[in-house]
Amino acid sequence: QAQLVESGGGLVQPGGSLRLSCVASGFGFPLNYYTIGWFRQVPGKEREGVSCIGSTERDIYYADSVRGRFTISRDNDKNTVYLQMNGLKSEDAAVYSCAADLPLKDVQTMCTGGSEFDYWGQGTQVTVSS
Image (cartoon, rainbow, N blue to C red; front, side):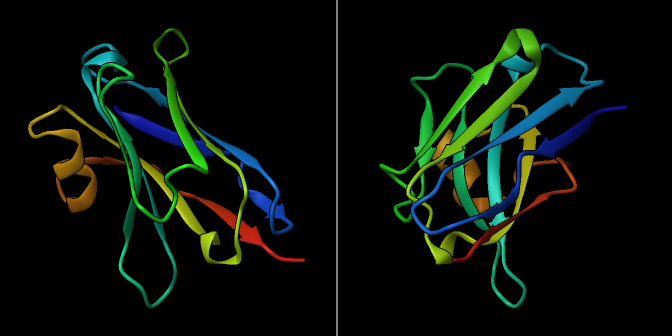
């Protein structure tokens, strides 16, 4: 059974850094076949597509709110996708979830839509506070 497990969340001061990990298991194809996305959600707000990566690292999308501060990468040998988050702001606080699906559409469309993904992890909490 396909599963995604996130880790790496926690409490960080403004300006600090965290690296989130998303480990995939049980998928029918090698992980590099899939588009992987990081999404975040705050209670009462819509889910936001933060960053997504296609089968290669040339195929990457970042939301305007995180571009230049966050970096997504993948290690297919470890079945893991990372989200390096630098320069964290209070508005970055949220539950971050990773998602995966076959690339039925381009990365930006999948990331800004969110509904294109069938597989989701449980999420990891990121808190930014002094």
